[in-house]
Length: 251
Image (cartoon, rainbow, N blue to C red; front, side, top):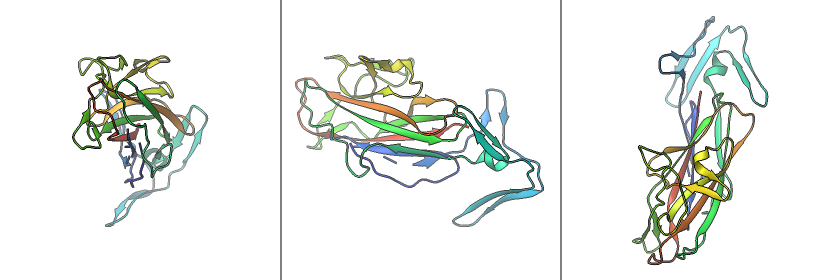
């Protein structure tokens, strides 16, 4: 599998990253969020001496004047943002391990002999409600013959009514290509644990695979595990697809 870097836009970030499987993965983006519940919504505002938003063809500037108390403070588990600009501006970065220019190679597929691998996805953000990690892929794993496909694992990220949820890796029914969360901050119990990890197929569109709630000072890593195997009638060889990771900050 491999990684590349694409540029992102700003305003609150969605950083996307892709990997390649031979047995290929990348990408970035951003989004604005607000504090809300089912019944209430709080938009950031301020009372001051002036300010506003200015734009040109290539730049955008948001400023305020006369805010009396501004600044930021943090500890290992808490973060305080005082002032309008501190409140509405945040940062988020996403990084994946390995050489960004090279595919991550899980080896050739031989039916009956599972191939495995892993990627560490690291997110750093000052978002006080943490972030979500979404995943997707462009198509089923495709053989180098450009015709033969490897089926997806039967597990799904979401449980009923959307699907069965993550499932154990069991022959002959639950094979194919899938992923699990091996390690991370507050990894959901639905992914199981050693030695009984549960797997799901990468979806065709972005679906949240992991939610990291609350502020954390510094980088936060999540280890994604990959696995592929097939029945004996599956064609051996190298298969590949592109997997996309998207981190979205939560205000």
